[in-house]
Image 1 (tube, rainbow, N blue to C red):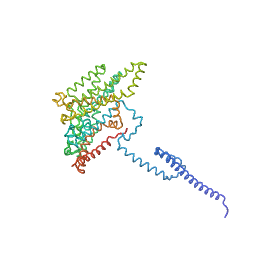
Image 2: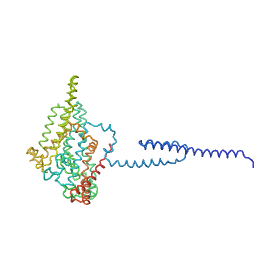
Image 3: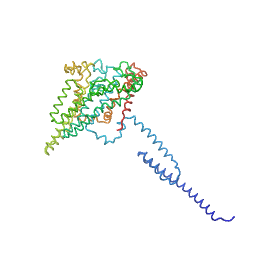
Image 4: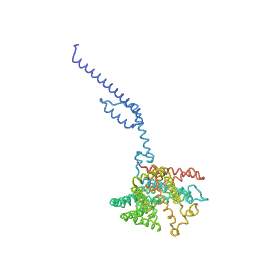
Length: 527
């Protein structure tokens, strides 16, 4: 057979190309193994780093490094990282069950940048929780625990100051003082620095938005109430011996009629010219909104009318309005105007401190600094101020915790003298409960405003979280308590029993835990 040189060349080139192709495959596989080992090393040395970031980078490098169109074989370590990352992502979903003060994403520096009035939010949040506890006590316990403490009725929760944790009206009064303070703080500061134009613009915006900011969230947040009523969530049957029966809105034939009844029933609540004190059938805790709206208009009117007055004239006229509201039983307006007066006192102290600093020359400043080091740094002035503020704070809490007059306040230890000092006209008008407590609420806010160590209690992460969700908590808690709360109480009592205080307390405690969890999940916010 003759030797074919051309065929031999073709055969040789074919074998060479196949070998080159095989070598290319081997080199590609070797580089893939090296890259996977490099990725494993980085996974070892970066256990505390962002694993998702490294994983994405490795995948990107593998795609770009494959010059040949072969599908890479994932390594075992690569699959392990994917599984671990998926597991961690699954755990991350559980964060929705936690309130933001536990899983906050804010940096420490951001946490320290708080407004000067941040303590107001914390105080409002604590008061909101106490209002919720008050309504819990009404649906699960009798009226006895709301009576004043005495020898024949001596539960721990009835002690002075302690009983504030289940006293709703007292904490609502704190709400109103805080609102008056918050609404007037910025306008009064602008008046002090003669920024009247900015003050007028801000005041116009506040007046325009006030009605919608109060009532629109109530309409939206309470919108599940008619759905709950339509599906029979409100049974209307109270627990045995409970102080109140649950809300029982009418259950209509179809859901559209139920929603229509919801809209129609809320109209009197948001009426600008209504008498107020309306018990809304879907949430009777919202009786405070009309009072808050009208009282805020009183504060706005005072700020506008007195913006050009001197400081003394403004304070004197504001005091007269407060006394008029107090004497003629307009306690909502009294509390709002009282909050405005606390801001005036705060600004007066600031002006006094500024004048004192400007009046000192260098010699006097050095002498004052030396004197301050002898007394203040030594702790005498600071301890005296702290002691006085603490005593005043406790006195204010004691007076604020005064039981209502239909709850045997005259027989309660510590409150007999206070009841005797109430004028007769308050008794005859049925307003005896609005003599001492509004004054105590204003006094407490004033004391906290003058004591930074007391403000620190209400600027903690927990208190600030409660302050951020306080309004939503106040709006939504009634529809949860009067549907789920009643049902849970009866359910646990049937399982555990109620023939002893411990069994009853365990049943109510479990109900409170479930209801509290529902509140926490529903009100969670991302900071």
